[in-house]
Structures are given as structure tokens and as C-alpha cells.
Length: 43
Image (cartoon, rainbow, N blue to C red; front, side, top):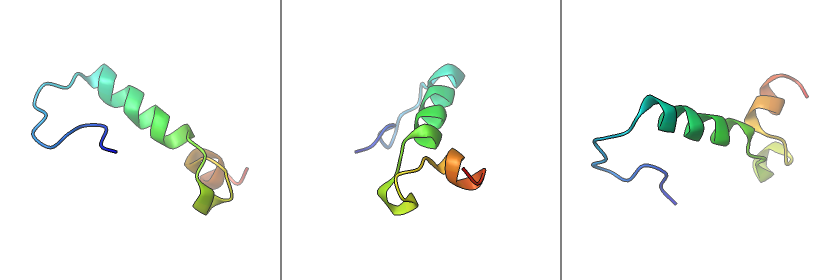
């Protein structure tokens, strides 16, 4: 799954911020089902 396909030229800062927020708050199996944000903050 690619959030921004290769060659994407017109991406707004708002779209990038949305994707960044989604990635940082999405639980990951490799982090014991914690989000990267939770994992790095010691949560």
C-alpha cells in the first residue's frame, strides 16, 4: 500500500500532515500493538 504513489507531484502540506499523523498514530504489531507515538513516548 502506497499512500503517495511514485511521481506524485501535487501534494498539499495539509495532505502530508494528514498522512504523517495517520502513520504516527496507527498501532503496529511489531510495537506490541502500540502506535509509534505511544512507543516512543514510553506509553
